[in-house]
Amino acid sequence: MSQPLTEEQQSDEVRFGFGANWKAFLESLDEARIQEAVASLRENLLCESYAGKRFLDIGSGSGLFSLAAHRLGCDVVSIDYDRESVACTKRLKEQFGDSSRSWSIDRGSVLDPAFMNSIGTFDIVYSWGVLHHTGDMKRAILLASERVKPGGKFFISIYNHQGGASRRWLKIKRIYNRLPPRVRPIWVIMIAGVYELKFAFARLLQGRNPLPFADWKAKRRDRGMSAWHDWVDWVGGLPFEVATPEAIIMPLREQGFVLDRLKTVGHGWGCNEYVFHNEM
Image (cartoon, rainbow, N blue to C red; front, side, top):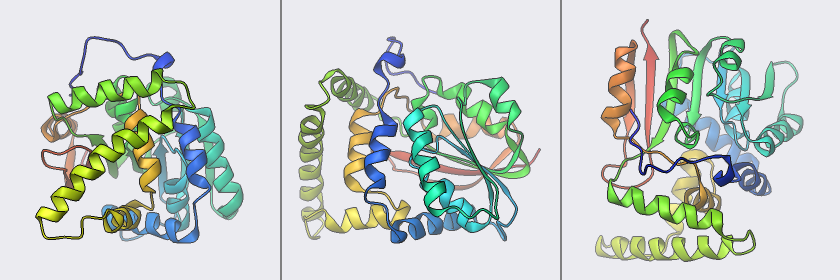
């Protein structure tokens, strides 16, 4: 399913500090961003009702989408391998949670079968931009999909495979993680600057305003996220794996999953989004 980029194994020693990035993101979190996350779930999942549904957020990160599911009326289970991400999710629960609905938060790995079995099955399993960061994407997708109840939804996003471009991004990410922490923001600015300039020229050729603000605003509307923290995640995020849509869809189809929605980035970089339902 996954297509390794190199023969080199990616271990915990080169794991990006996702939780530290999410902790910084929470400083800019407001009610508008929360409502945008709620709208994103509604738009993609298209459930008639969310009240009482069990929702599993694998790799909860900042906790924003766990909170969005909680706002929709789901009983939420949030898990993350990163300790700081777990702390971020707990912080959101304390700040915005409703005690009348269930919301549990645990540290655990999607790659741990015993742990995954212990949390049961769910009406909705959600993992956006996470499973390709585990170091074993194929196994992570399999173990995550096993938590989906018959008739339940499986919503994941996975980095698009770009061949040589993906290998170049892996080198960029490795450089970031080898740099001293105080230098890393400079590396992000350098890389983001190069790509934002390319995007500006592309917008200009399309007859659009070359400035990035409209695209940044659209990103916020799409998932309630910030452009800067997305850049930090993208430039630094290790482990890193990628896959074509076919490599994701076909194995899940063999397991009884039917694709409801697909949003791809074409030949570009970023995440392809998949929403399946379990017919088994």
